[in-house]
Length: 203
Image 1 (spheres, rainbow, N blue to C red):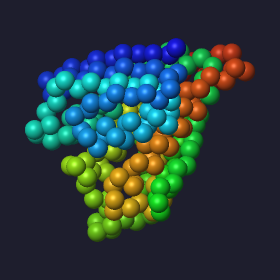
Image 2 (tube, rainbow, N blue to C red):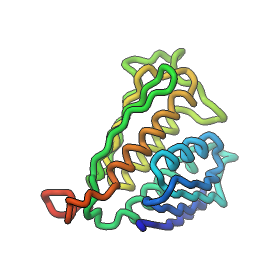
Image 3 (cartoon, rainbow, N blue to C red):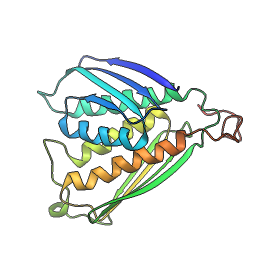
Image 4 (spheres, helix red, strand yellow):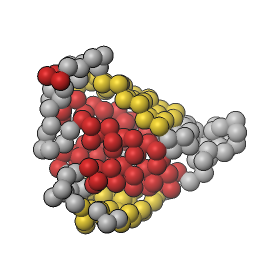
């Protein structure tokens, strides 16, 4: 089993993530941010990751920025630790998931070089932008994905075709697709005996 337990305590938050990459999709998530809880439950379910998130301290009375970003940081660190030297993994994964008129396309590469690129429609006017839900905004999802990708050491590219003004309908397929794409990338290929890089190492 590829597992990790990572605590992160700052002056603003106190978060612990427990992860089993080779799980069954069971989750127990208390991030302090209701909307993000639901998105991460979807991510874990579709990726078959067992995921527990405990947030005992959060400066949500100020705003959700620090908690949202720190969750991305510690989740990325948990995946990085659980993957170890990454021997035998597929490394790449991609998935497209529709929801109503929205389609999310997610591609990942566990390369050791963390980066995030998000493309949310060709041109979205301010009047057509997904509207905040329970205080959560599209920009917070971007911050979460960037922190997650950088800490994991993953190239994460997300494209959303026809984003909706309904933030839930816009982001739900993204988190589902991310779960499936990361499941593919982290899966063990029995033919791969070593680290999936011609360099022989993935940082």
